Amino acid sequence: MTERNLPQLLGDARRWFDEALAEAMRAAGEKPVTIGQQAVFAALDPGGTTVAELSRRMGVTRQSTHQAVQALVRLGLLEQSPDPASARRLRTVMTEEGHRVDRVARAQIARLEEELAGRIGGAALRELRRALSADWGPPFPEDA
Amino acid sequence: MTERNLPQLLGDARRWFDEALAEAMRAAGEKPVTIGQQAVFAALDPGGTTVAELSRRMGVTRQSTHQAVQALVRLGLLEQSPDPASARRLRTVMTEEGHRVDRVARAQIARLEEELAGRIGGAALRELRRALSADWGPPFPEDA
DNA sequence: CCAATGTCAGCATAACTGACATCA
DNA sequence: CTGATGTCAGTTGTGCTGACATTG
Image: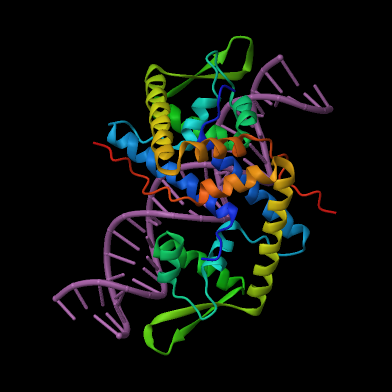
């Protein structure tokens, strides 16, 4: 085994949460919202947010965000309405159902974190979050 | 911002490494080996390994592994030869070029980790690795 | 006959680039 | 005109399931 490298470990951890959340939502009788979809919810503010703004907050392209939002609209969890202040803007907001599912998903994620704390230790989990929350800066080496 | 949740943070961190490694390989004049491909290299042992064994080590399906291996074979970084001991087994090994690229990739990853240590602190990085290396157990809640 | 191995085909998710119409 | 926004189309990477022939 020698030593797993960091990127692999990160990917594994991410997949752990992905699977666990999907399973938890299924067990709770909800649509299996993915982490990616939850990320959209998390970036929304109550007043309505444009796709372009969402993409900036999430750090992905407008097109990727657009696609994710469309999927959630089809699921009935988001809806879009024209912005009276500007005809080219669309305000994206959660539906009632969207709010409900979002609350369930957040609760499940919190529960999973507690479960994990019980397995690897609360201190380790806090350190994990601290390290990940730090500013990593741009991913490009100064190169040369 | 309130509080980013853990799965998102993990995904962001993973993407940070992905981009950084791709960029570093490009800057080094190498083919942009991905983290996933590097994972295959890391799971190989010198004597030759079957796809089925690789998949067990990596924790993904035989089929996914097969696909990743085929891509690396097409790139000329891996090659397969029949196992004299058993006609249904194929031993996968690195080519010369594969070894070379693997060494470069490992070195770049190590350099990125050092760079990161300089940005978020060596202690934080060690704690990060410790938390991720711990046994998280199966991703399924005891549900009920 | 059973299990392991390799493989083919198809699908899902989540990202990307490129192109383009519309509107401030 | 320029730039921001939304959107369509196509591609890639990486995982999955199902099915199947071959072999031990």
